[in-house]
Image 1 (spheres, helix red, strand yellow):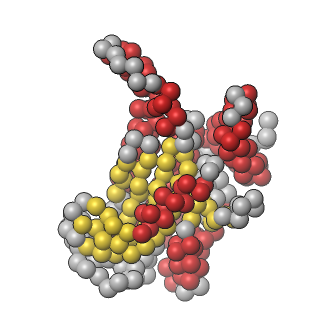
Image 2: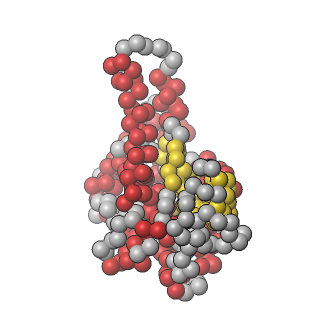
Image 3: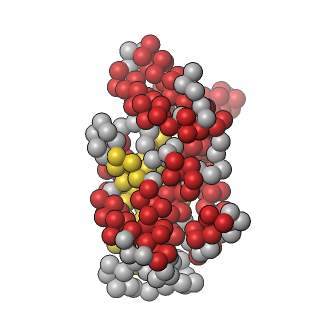
Length: 291
C-alpha cells in the first residue's frame, strides 16, 4: 500500500512506501462485532471490588471473547506473507507478502482494513485476504461459542495520521447492523466491482470469480453475504478447518436455540434459528449428520 495521492477510483496503490504517511486508495473494510457482548457487560453490574480474584472471575468471559477476536485476527494477518505450497492457492499466495491488513478493535468489535493491490494483474489480493481473515474469524469465534456478525464493502478513502477515512467503513458498520444473525453481509459496491472484474479475464478475472463464488443470497431476506461454510469457502478459504470445527459450531447453534427458547428470548432464539437453517444444508458437505 502506498503513500502518494492516487488518481481517484484507481484500484492500485504504490508499492513499498511508508504505510504511516498520508495516502489514498480504494479500500476494503470488514467490520466484525461480537454478538451479545454489551449484554454480557451489563450483566456484570457496577459493583466495585478490591478483590483481584473476584475481578478476574467476573470479567474473564468478556476479556477472553475480545482476546480471541483481536489476537486471532492479528495472528492471521501476520501469516499472510507466507507462500502457500498448495498449488490451488498459488494465484492467491504469490502476492500476499505485499498485503498489509490493519486490525483495530474496540472492546466488542474489529475493523480489518486493506488497500487494493498495486499489481494490475492481481488487484484483488488484499480483498481476497480480508475475506479469508473474516471467514477464519467466524470459524474460530463460533467454535468457542462466541457469536459474531459483520459487514464488508469497498470504497475510495484517505489514510491519514493513523486513521482511515472512507464511506466503506460506514457501510460495513451499517451492514453489520442489518445482519441480525451470525453472518457477514456484502455491500453493493463490492458486489458490482466483482461482477465487473469476473468477466475481465486474466488473474484479476480469475480471482474475482473465486470471490464471487463465495457470495451467498439468503433465501429469507435476499441479502448477499459470505457463504463461509459453503463449497467455495471450503475449497478456497476454510481449508484449515475440519468437520470437528463445523460440528462445534452446529452444536453451539442448537444450544443457542434451546437456551434462548427456554428463557423466552424470542429475538435471540430467532438468530440461532436462522443460523441452524443456514447450516443444515451444508452439514453433509463437511460429512456431518444433523444429530
